[in-house]
Length: 550
Image (cartoon, rainbow, N blue to C red):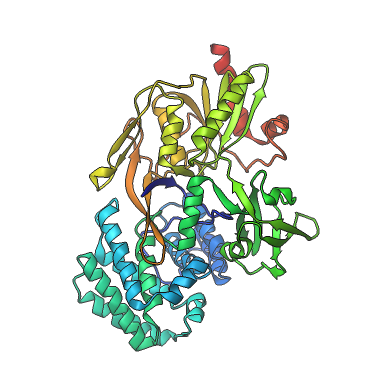
């Protein structure tokens, strides 16, 4: 098992294509109910637009939209219902566009699928942070099956179109049978899934394997915001994230307004060498139009073995389509970028920490010594947009700047998850620090920010961080070469403060109206960067004053 603390965003990194958006606690029916709300209510307009996205089956966009709306209207029941429903369909679409899941669907017998479910339930019982509610997990699986049977992605693949009346009778019968059972342990939960498979076969003509797999995915994905079932391909991609390398093109994609847009191009990647840029739209892959594809479908087309080629048709904003032939190659993901001296007169240095992976400690050492040789007297560390990564990596990075004391504490249901991580004096950098954070700084980023705050080691500038305060373990499964991501512990700052739903408050609040866009790196475009980036400008002012006080 590997400890993994990361927020899972809505963008897709090719070769690192695991996306799991936060799931709500209660699963709902598949389609939006009509709600009588005042026309002037801002939530009404949000729901109207969200339902339009759902109607067009643009699930990734719907999830992002509802997540952002819930930040503005936390706890709104109607938005939570739509978020959860959209997530059920989004997860389903992702699974059914995943090659490894399709192989499992074809190769696993019903008994194999039940064995997989039993293995998953055992992992939950042994490792999950809270005692499992078995009855609730079964209901989550039933709700996932209910959503699947109303989704053409599921019904077309499994060859069954079911009328609304038949569905209503089936679920009324199934829930009635389950209600008469005492589901108080994992064995009873496994038997409940077997009953669902038997009833679906008898009443709807469905084979048992896809039914049981909905219970597998429904149970794990509904445990909390971050636990999930991982297909074999997704499991391998998680390991790529941890290791910081993969075979692919080196682009990060998102789906928005029916188009696939490049969010980011990794430096020195095949995509960069081929002339692709952030903001470009991918309109075709090997001649196949991408207009109706989700990011996972596009990823399947863009991925392939090392040395193979792919033709990508891209369009820059306001430009004409161009076809680029790219060779899939080994890509290293940099976790430290843009290291530079942004104020040579005063020795103010800057670097961006993009994630916490195996190589981050080594990469940061290299960057710090480079900046030291260039005359660094104060350092701005930019953690904005950093979704997290390895717990151990976060501890290593904090240890470079804190001489002694607690870095972070973890607490779980299993005593082996209880641990206090401490700093060591050797190798500590004493350079004054300013740390930039925002609402997308999450998980391992918050471990770093929380330690800097509690030890009064840095001035925090920006916006309150995301508020993810839990540790996930990655568990391989014996059947189907798949895996689980399970929340195993919660983590706390050196002063014992929680992070979940709270985050880290900056010392100096600076709101960024829009994400700054600057061509090139900070070093060569310092003036335009400072004009476009109010947070960075404020951080520079503080760093300069820190030097003046020395």
